[in-house]
Length: 399
Image (cartoon, rainbow, N blue to C red; front, side, top):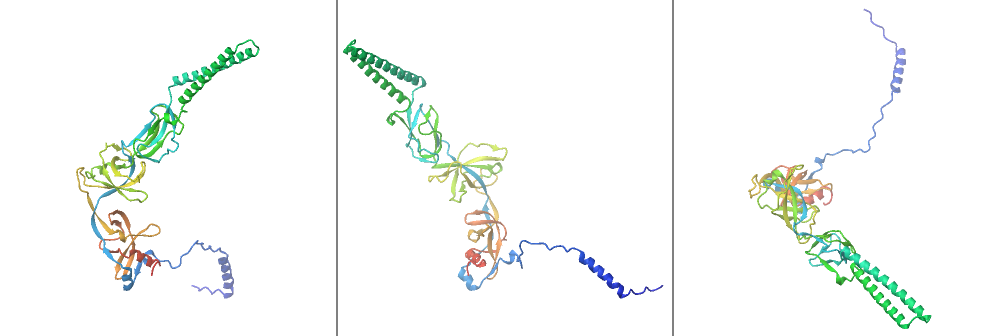
């Protein structure tokens, strides 16, 4: 078997050059352009631990409590709607046909007191009476025109020495009587059309103190009997309609009150159950309406307003008086912190003078305690006093 001879170096050099040119001819893939780049990124968990000195801990007044599992009341947060108490909302109607006066300032949302005069109603006669009055005015006008024509002829005859002074005086008297008759007819017609003085009008007064819900007429409107003028609602007490799931109706404690909270963050109020007819379940939502009454002397709530209602649930028996309880992790409200985006945090002591910020998920508030659904474990020590100071220390707000 023969050994192949070595290729001379002079032949290899051109071959290497050709391969190099072929490699250089390939287009290189451009490097991707990134809109932004963060150098040395750090995880969030590495930014949440704060270590302070003993003097700083004393100066900040830091106190901690252990997270524990408590028995808290079973509640349900549902939406409700404010309604006027039935029988305390009235509709004012026109007693007779007439023309309204003096109601230009009555607007929806205005507060009125009991006995306040809302309108003055100038009564109008029936249609047949109006027709008779119009005909009387036209007749009196015709009589005046005839009397004036007779007076003109009497004066012309007297000027031609063909008439007498007595005939002229009688014609003048007839004109005066016709003028008086026309004036009286016009006055009766003006009164019938509602142009009489206010002293002849009927006052329309508010039967109760409340708020104007709706206005259907304006000043000068001609109304017919039983026509709606104004709707009023007394708001010293209002009802809250709560659509509750049918399955929760059996868990309502007998006589159990609820907490009604405005959606704008106002002060909550207690709602007392009222005896109202059950309206039945709604097929589409599986709910039934229950009603609660709240005191509203300051008229903070208006009919139609939406509110949040915290309903305390009892056992599965409709006659159960006590509220059911469930086990849940709770922390004091002072331990909960919020960041600029609404995130919820607590500081947990992980070592002496070492505190770690942990994100938590709040389920609800029960008094001055916060029920936590996840984020921390039972037994962990959370900071109450000084939590806000630690937050500022971590982000450079305090030193």
